[in-house]
Length: 299
Image (cartoon, rainbow, N blue to C red; front, side, top):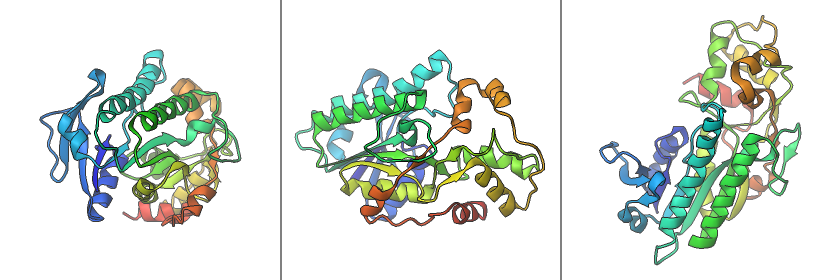
C-alpha cells in the first residue's frame, strides 16, 4: 500500500518506514518543512497549526499512520509544556480528520499510536477495556484517543486501530540511552525503591506491531509479555555491560527536585496485558528483557 506517516521523522517513524519499504510498500511522510528532503522518503507538506495538509497527500495515501506528538518525557511539565504536549497530539489528529474526511473514498487503513500511560499507575497488567487513569499521561492518552475515535467516525477507514505503546527500547533515542549512560560510567543505581513497574517493548517489535495493525481493528496494548521493574532493568544493563552497581538508590525526593512532576515517569509505572495482541497471532522477536538488551547493546 501507499502508507502516509505523520511523525515519520521520529525514532519509531524512521525504523517503521524502513520496514514498510522492505515489505514492498510505498512510504511518504507529512512534513512541516517544505524544503526538507529525505533520501528515500517522499515528503508532503502539512501544518497542523493551520489545519493544512497538501491536497496531493490526501489523494496519494491508501493507509495512514499517526505518530505525531511532542515527547511527554522530553518536554517539561510546566503549564505551557503540558499544553504543548496535549495540543501537539489533538491538533495533529484534528487536522488529519478535517482533511481526510474530504476524500471521496475511505482509506484502507488507519493506525494511531497512543501510550500505555493511558491506564495510570498500577503493579498489575491492564487490559484494553480497563478505564483510563487520572494522572497527566493518562489524560493526554485519553484525549488523544478521543480524537482518533472522531477520525474513525468522520473518515470511516476500512481498518482502524489504536496502539497503546509501552516505552520503546532503542539506542537511537527515547529513554534507554539516558538509562544506560550512568551505568556505563559506573554510577548507575536504582531509582526510588526500584520496585516500580517498567513497561517496555523492543523497537523491532513495536514497528512490527504498527505494520501488522494496518490489517487489524480495535485497540491493542503493545508491550513485551515479560513484566519487569526498574531494579531488574538497571541490573540487567549493568550485567551485560559488566559494570558494578555500587551506589545506593536515588531517592524519590531527589528525582522530584530535579524533574518535578515528570519524576512520576520513572517513579511510577504499570504493566500491559498483551493477550489480545497474542490472539492476533503476533510473534515477538524479543519477548524478554535480557534478549532485548543483549541485541540492543551489541549493536
